[in-house]
Amino acid sequence: MLIIGGGPGGSAMAMFLIREGIKPMILEQEEFPRFHIGESLTGEAGQVLRRLGFEDEMAKREYPIKHGVKVYGTTGENSWFVPVSARDKDWNLSLGHTWQVRRSNFDTMLLKEAEKRGATVMRGTATKPLLADDGAVRGVTVRWPDGKSEDIETQIVLDCSGQATFLANQRATGPKYLGNYDKQVAFFSQVTGAVRGSAASGEDAKDNTVIFYAKKFHWAWFIPLDKEVVSIGMVTPNADFLAKKQTPEEFFRNEFYNINPELRNRVPEMNLVEKVHVIPNYSYQVRGFCGKGFICIGDAHRFIDPIFSFGVSVTMREAEFAAPLVREYLEGKNRNGKNPFREHQIFCEKAIDNLEDMIDLFWEQPFAFATFVYHRYPDELTDAFSSRIYPTERQPSPAIIAFRKLLKRTREYDKDDYSVPIGSRYHPERAAIWEPNSPVDTTEQWMGAR
Amino acid sequence: MEIPPKLKEYIDNNRGSLPPLTDPDEPLQIDSLGLIRMVAFLENDLGYRVEDEELIAENFVTMRALGELLETKTPTAPTWQVKAPAQEGIPTFTVKREK
Image (cartoon, each protein chain N blue to C red):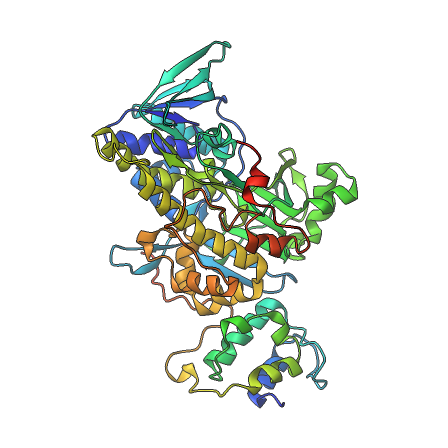
């Protein structure tokens, strides 16, 4: 069993496989610890960590405790709060908490623990998949740090390579469709002396995430990383940055406070203790991301928009869902079909479609969205914000169904696995929203010859 | 159309230090989160049902826009007669505190 990537997805995958009695190898090309963005966890990500036995270690490391997300409206005068919540087995809702994590530290903790529990961790880079005549993945070619290459054969490749999307870029999967959320760019750093909430729990808990909304595609985040340091970031359209002709740091320092008046209260001074990083948003969806000999996990098959902090949560949850299926496959189940993991693929696709409907409505109809969160469907949407978005979690909820109605959208799952997804910028529905005057290419034109 | 007196009172009480509105076309000067609370007030306290499709900020920006929105509607029994109204500023979660 080979896992590509030693981030939270790869490490969680390894630890869940070990629980199933399978000892995998993790291939990671970078030396840990390394910087990574994506520092806030959802309620269910916290539950995954508890199931993996990390609750005490998270406390020992003093990761900031997140009770929810406070969102400031445009003028900074009003705010609303989405608490982290939990469901018991009878689906009773209660308040909960999860964590904020400095990723360099968190990812290293998970990877070391995966190794301690029995995974073999190797430094190396997967360069290409080994494909059988029928397209099945039967291993990968690895380049070791000394420059030598070697073929590693395995029954299943678990692609946890994140936005590198190893198997999709190597075309071992179905098509990778580029999405709509690619016109924004994120600038971020870390700051000391930021002003947090003052309460022990609830809306003003000291280590909550704070989101500052400005207008469509302009927003900022505030995520406590430890007792001193807070991760701050700003997302704006790329065009705004290019027009100013400033360095990323100049732009970040100059524009940050323009996002929302409340930022002056929260970040009195820009005492940056980390360089200013810049990442363009890049949304995509891989169709056919599971197949004979492979499963793609988390960002390795889909990324939409970072606004709701779902990255780590989704990848760890998908790893947990996939582990027993991998064991069953090794035991001989589902060996004859075209895609042994098709059910898992649709299961994950449905969940991220629910998330995509949330994100789309948030940007397209923020007033309706906020009314739903605050007033119409508060319980259903705390579920969704805690990343209970899977079909086994009473989804799609009435809230998601109402979103779809407003988006004039239906979701279907019995069609061709490779068809143009709604999230693609070339889906007729979406192309019209985003580029009113642009012609809609056919998928074939856009994909080019494969 | 005239808007219900209770709604006018609500609006005037939620414009910070601004004086009561007199011009039906003057912007309410209530930000979007304040408008969401107003939707909750319309539904919970006055018994109007605002359809999902009507949840666009333009329907709530002036008294005239509000009047036109409510013109077609008949209020039913306000929900506060059935359950307690939402606390100001706090979402109406029916959740239990974690022990």
